[in-house]
Image 1 (spheres, one colour):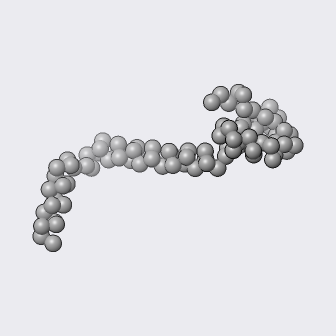
Image 2 (tube, rainbow, N blue to C red; image 1 turned 30 degrees about the vertical axis):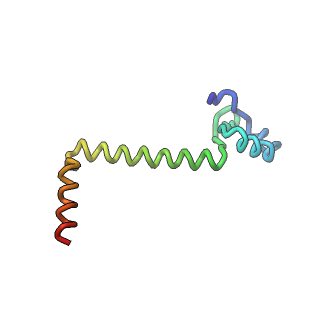
Length: 91
């Protein structure tokens, strides 16, 4: 998506709020709102926002996992499975 095509001044938002909300839901493209010629806010539909939040959460999990690998805080999969099997056998 090119943000340059989705830029509107705050006065446009004030005058066309209902129409903008409809467009956001239909197009699922974010809208940049400007004030005094500067970008001040991004509007997006709820579904897109939720997807972005889920994506960010997954990326955070991957980053944490990568840090654990780099810090040597992981064990080989075979070792972990062997320990689990041993626990099951003794339970």
